[in-house]
Amino acid sequence: MSTDHYDILIVGAGVAGSALAHALATITSKSRGSPIRVALLERSLSEPDRIVGELLQPAGLESTLEGIDAIPEHGYCVVQSGRLVHIPYPDGRQGRSFHHGRFIMGLREHAKRAPGVDVIEATVNELIECQHTSKVLGVRATRSSTSGDGTKAEKESFFADLVIIADGCFSNFRNSVMGSSARQSDFGPVLLYQISEHDTRMLVDVKHPLPSDLKGHILTNVVPQLPTSLHLPIQEALENDRKYTKECVFLLGDAWNMRHPLTGGGMTVALNDVVLLSQLLAKVDNFSNWDQMSDLLSRWHWARKPLASTINILSVALYDLFGADDECLVVLQNGCFKYFECGGDCIRDPVSLLSGIAPSPSLLAYHFFYVAFYSIWVMFVHPRPISNPVNGEKPVLAAPPIWEYPYLALKSVRVFWTACFVFGPLVWSEIRWW
View 1 (spheres, rainbow, N blue to C red):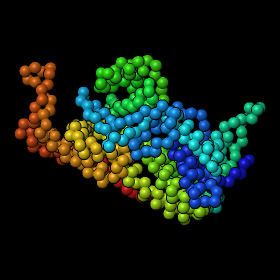
View 2: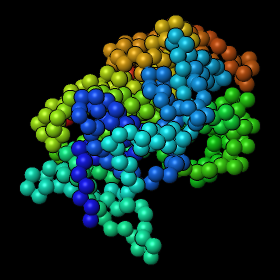
View 3: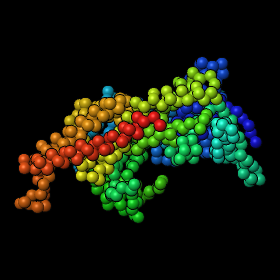
View 4: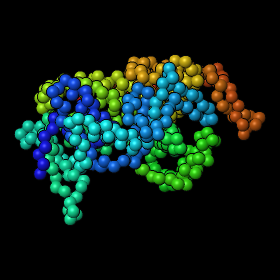
């Protein structure tokens, strides 16, 4: 049916898609006689009900936060076996947490009001490719509305010089653009944060295999490990639970690059990608010139690396550490907690890395291996719980005796190797260009 032609077509009106549509309309209009024509296609423009994208780090953008009951976040509190350590954001900075759906609706409203942006509620069915060059020319989509007699709307064609896929982590087009081990444990890290004045989100990492009685698993195995002040509210919440369980085209947002949600850095990376990409696109005169676009995407790829790689590596490394199911990882986990207890730069630098304030992979590597060596030192000199020969029920704390040092030396090699095994592949996955 329709043969609308746009400068840029964006598939997906989530965080990255909506923000990019608005950024293109505002930033690039300064260097052009007229705004760029942008089509923003989204399957459903109703408010999404999801539990992702609810934490905006201090390094993220703070627009569209008015009127959505956003809650200031001042940092983290890490709890381990009854011990806790506070990790505040440096220099009094604040993040924000909120309901994902309200934030998305705010972003979409900004996109709708932007000059030259058409927000269209339609399901994208396929990419339109040139039969001779395989160049992507646009998309075919079905509008959500139906005619009065109940018949479904026909597919429409939308053409553009450049197509950007930003349809999230479950992207339907990732394989089209890019080409195409179970872990046993009770549970991993637990993340809690407030999303409005009266609502707090709790995310539990339940590892494979999924328990048949998930509610019972949380009450029996997870809740007892949390501070006692949280037990009753969690029990009450579980009583009323809700389950969630080519050329001229490229990926953006979670469709392109994902990380573990433990550190809440996804939106920070996505919005930083939008800022960098929109600034580069502002200098492009012809979006259909793929040689020029390829060079632009290469520059964008490496410009985003400091922030993206820092948050990506840290999210997975912390998950491996705090979801420890290995003897050596437990040593690193304990050393990491004691490292935080040292305060000062041992807290300031890691939280700056985590929040995107200090996008530095080299600083991340420094602290990661400092934690590794500190964990080994802790293993040698810090008291540890041992069984009490007098009263077998209550363990006592005692430093390792000197005759255990040879065994601990061998274990130290294994701990350091484990640290390298965790960190090395993550760094390699970020620095490779293909």
